[in-house]
Image 1 (tube, one colour):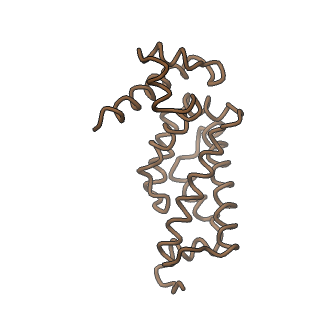
Image 2: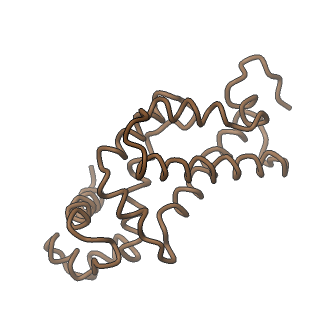
Image 3: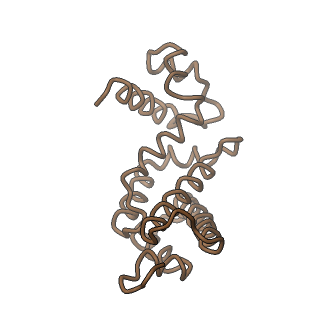
Length: 182
């Protein structure tokens, strides 16, 4: 692992520690630098701001998740539950760079890339793009609701419900092995 990657992980780990004791909007870059024992220019070399750092943490956690595998998606959600305080505080922040917006755009792009690969096309039709955005809005919102308000439903059950709620045009592309795609 390169030094730059290790530095980002170090900063992210310290950010998670800081977020155990205070909300995101109360944490300053100076405080992050003090906790990580780095200078401000080093922080800004790696991240635009603290919101970019929080997004990087989410993206790092989500990167290995196969969004069309129930097992992989459930593991990703279980990890979110294990890091409850971080995600709760990140969700609670409603600034211009809210976590849910990063999550939405990330998952829309992931599903669009997979759809393009499965359909062997560079351009998705308007209806499919709409279905992907609708599904991602719903799943990101329901993930937040599950994480913050539901202590009884397992990650596996939530993922099964999400997949069952997927629009038919998406389901046929991602899960129907017999479907013939243009």
